[in-house]
Length: 390
Ligand SMILES: C[S@@+](CC[C@H](N)C(=O)[O-])C[C@H]1O[C@@H](n2cnc3c(N)ncnc32)[C@H](O)[C@@H]1O
Image (cartoon, rainbow, N blue to C red; front, side, top):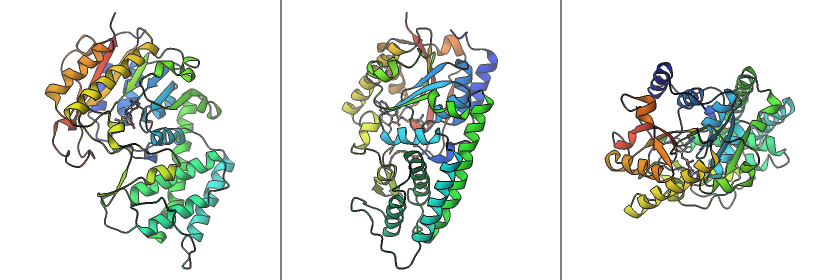
């Protein structure tokens, strides 16, 4: 069991919550997963509430910020998410490449840059590609076609490079048409950047005692709901009960577009799913835990209760749940959230363990869904700490 929280730990947590540092380094830059953790916060929580070698759980892992930080700090982690894209991104971010993998990926990028900039191009975009400018549709279809014979580990990395390229050129408010020549120039640059990010991750893991060939064995990444997690055979047989659950679930009444890109900030495209080659097919509320309507909020709190009931059943009886949560209406939803946790069998230990003022964070310029922007309640996020009720 981890002893109570020291004054130094509290001050480190407070400092990490105040960070405004640009998110970079290791493989964090691979994908801007919506509503992601700041890595500094995930790192401080993991340092404060777990020890080297222990298993951690993040049942709403998103793009895997906690997975990267846990591995880098010598922990083992189970990450899980209902979004197939989240699992894909978390996997590529923490899967080392061999020297041969890297050279094959570089060759692919060179070939894409060469073949897809020719004037008399015969590539036709795939029929299922919608709401993309034609130059981008041709480029991304061709680049995917050219990875046809690659090993899965290499093609996954190559797809992740295309995701990053797509996010910076399509999923943005810019009014510049993404021309093939521009995409072709950026591709090899991104390959180099991302290989170097992965090299950093491997080096950081090595420094904390995890050799390159042990990294993938220290994380288990699942594509599934947190509800019913205790019945999943993959986790029942693999992990020791986690002492720490570090996570950030969807926020009540706050709609984040987890599953679409918005070309020019408007037209929604499912491009990330066909680029990553993972299953799509759900609407936005599926990933947000419910709609913003009264009914949706009821479903949301029920899902939280069910999910944390499952989580309680697999975690260590002395462990902690440390989570970051925001609210569209703090006054009514923070108490409702704490009540949902209580129904799941947890007690709020913020005042007994952390004392003083609540630990919270202001987040500027979040890309919340359409009409929810600016200085609203959901720009404040809370750090909640819970332990299992006796
Ligand atoms: C706030 S995001 C997590 C972001 C993450 N901390 C990161 O750094 O990228 C919340 C995540 O919860 C996932 N989610 C929603 N409902 C879920 C459920 N019932 N079980 C598991 N994951 C769920 C969403 O797909 C989304 O990725």
